[in-house]
Length: 409
Image (cartoon, rainbow, N blue to C red; front, top):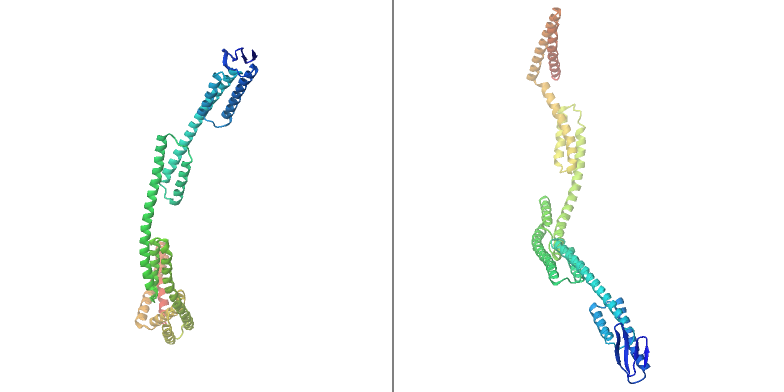
């Protein structure tokens, strides 16, 4: 009989292993010595030790699922429980029990991790849904469309939730995208309609602009071109493929008209500048008539100057007030001289002036006598009152005398 600390072989060749529950039959060995039998079953034990060690390492260092780990543990445990090895089988059972405990902890940790990931995924998807629903109301078509496409990619990268929750959130997310697409489609359809209407309007404006490009009715045509430009701006933009061509035609028609007008106006401005020079010379000639001595000669000379003035054409608008003002000043001086001469030579006016002067002189003399009499009587209040009345009559008299002098006496 042969034995070691964990097993023995009896005289019949039966191999036993020692366990906490007592000896357990391992098997029968008839092919060799008892030492060879123990060595064989000890090697089987070492094989179990290696297998458990590898499993412990896999559980510790890899993402082996709890289900697969438990299956492997159960497979090894069956071999240990079958007592077909010689060694410390109880120690192997303890290691397997610890491994079961470790796998259980890993299973719980992964469960919690999955719950956490699921919760995070739920919040992430809810945030995507909220943002998508906000974007569905946006009018920033390009930016919002690109952002929605980005949200779809983000959604695809998130873990799935339970089917009911995932479907509900996806329905809201998809509905927001559809609502945005519908609004964008309606917007661009309306925009296309507006641009088509703008194209028709601008074609009409171009046709009118081209029809007027040869006009020489400068003022009204220029005013109408300004109106057309306002209508053009108010019409909005046509489709891109039409807008530039229409604008080039519209602007080209205006350029033809305004270039022709500028040429004509340049000639007119040169002529008006020459007219201004001539009128300034006549205004200088008229100013030499001042001050007026010989009224008849001055009147004849001014009439000649004015006839030549009227024969000259227009001058630049901004220079007109100044040069015409110089002529008007001479004309007013002539009119004043004529009025003064008329008053001086009018007998009826002279008689009226002399009569008024005599009346005022008599009134002044009378008041002077009354004042002297009041002072002599000591009635100063009456005298003061009469003196104030005298001042008014004297002023009228002085004015009348001045007018009388205009008549030469």
